[in-house]
Length: 121
Image 1 (cartoon, rainbow, N blue to C red):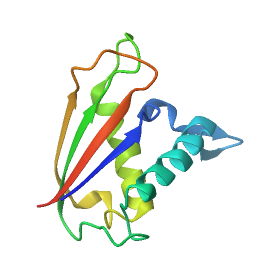
Image 2: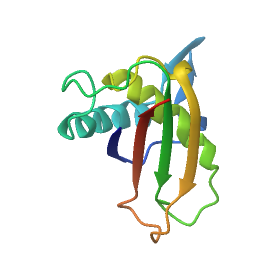
Image 3: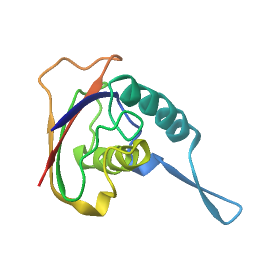
């Protein structure tokens, strides 16, 4: 089992941009990937630190709300799954067997975090 705390990601609705007919990662998404990658490595997650879940896995995401706006909880799964692959914590996100998402009970705020738990399935 692996657990990591990450900064709050951009919504899946805001991670891609079409520019001159090409689909590119948005600037906020690139910044988040960089910060979240460093955060995960500091916590010893991924192939850089040899903490990896091989094969099928279950993913649990517990998210703080960054503010009081209405948000779709399921928009958090894609950027987080992609990051876990990038950092080497999982082989590929198609191997997810179960994804559980929930809001935390913490008050909304700018210090919003995401707690991610990975387990072999």
